Image 1 (cartoon, one colour):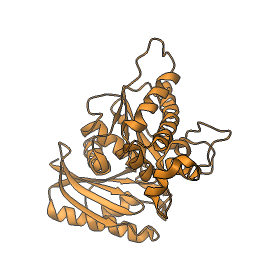
Image 2 (cartoon, one colour; image 1 turned 180 degrees about the vertical axis):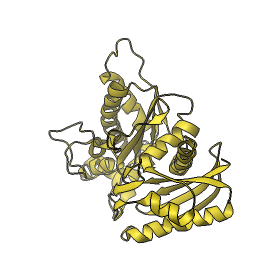
Image 3 (tube, rainbow, N blue to C red; image 1 turned 90 degrees about the horizontal axis):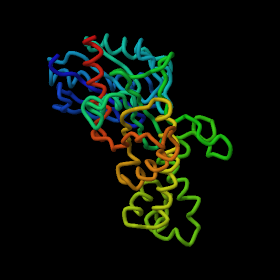
Image 4 (cartoon, rainbow, N blue to C red; image 1 turned 120 degrees about the horizontal axis):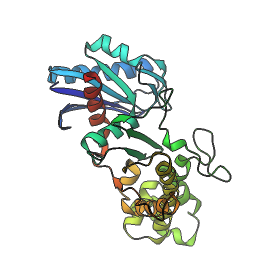
Amino acid sequence: MAVTIGIDVGGTKIAAGVVDGNGALVARRRIATEADDPRAVVAGITKVAQELLAAAPAVGAIGVGAAALVDADNGIVLSAPNISWKNVALRAMLEERVGVPVVVDNDANVAAWGEATHGAGAGAGDQVMVTVGTGIGGGIVIGGRLYRGARGVGAEIGHMVIQAEGGALCACGNVGCLEAMASGNSIGRRALERKGSPEAGRLVALGGDGEVTGQIVGQAAAEGDPLALEILAETGRWLGVGLANLVNIFDPALIVVGGGATAGTGDLLLEPARARMAELIIGRSWRTPPPVVAAALGYDAGIVGAAALARATIRR
């Protein structure tokens, strides 16, 4: 199979590319997502797929990563938080329109697969990827395969509950999920809670008349602002609680952390997470914690991973 196409479908954009066997992108397309119209989203995916097929007619398969709960075995999008999709037979619809085999999976799963095959996790064996952005997602690779669970919707790492009493309310409706405690949104929330304190001068200055966001906290922390550094450290420690749970359950060789919230914060977020994880894992008196490393593929992880997953799946 010469090349495959990867398509990353989110609530605001559809990003796609032709990917060779080494994980390199040789062509790209990107359009906005019309998230309120499920038919328009399918039409958008079809459009970018057809454009890339015209540019690279030797494509052997198409992989789609959707920000949704997905029945990967049947290629059905069960539901999506930011797109008006429910029980959409996406694989069948696309195959009918483009005439090429299609593989559909969750966006965090395909990003994890991308890092495991062509990114920071290449050659590492069993591994977990945690994506820290507006929310928290993840993917788990065990024995060279994605772990999806009995119903295909496993690896929802962001919704493990780490503070059931007194934790922050999560968008899913539960209290104290990892997503509510350690995401980019949680960084912004902590900053807003401290906005009126005397120490918040730099955060207020950077935020101007708008909200103090996680991005602003990251910028202030990079400048050495003490309060911003404290907020990132607090968030990182909560992330470390989640990582410790993952280590205790799966015993991975490696943890890869990516997502928009880590792009500008780096070790300011990851070092507290590593330290807290090491404090909480079982067997810590004799065990070496697995490395926690930054993702290598950046915003291309979904495209590269979807294309690589399509290649691996169609070959089986």
